[in-house]
Length: 94
Image 1 (cartoon, rainbow, N blue to C red):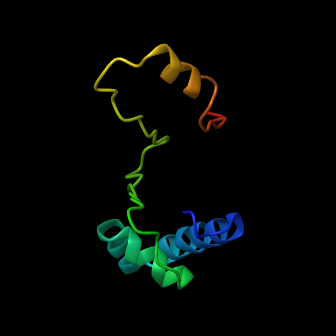
Image 2: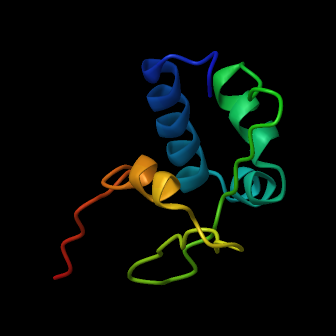
């Protein structure tokens, strides 16, 4: 979200989550059109070409997002470029 500040992103995501938790109609429309839902809660459109997918938890205890499959072998240079990068999170299961 290149034209969005980190604060813009945090605020929009928080507003989206709050609205989805309290408004069943908005929840359904957000699943159908995430970009429109973000614009509704933030007043800002997503950048051109930015793809946002929302997934219903549907009663799961944990929802994981799998990486896109790699369709070809990566070179050593490609592997070094991504080694240790990316986002991670800690999940506590009680």
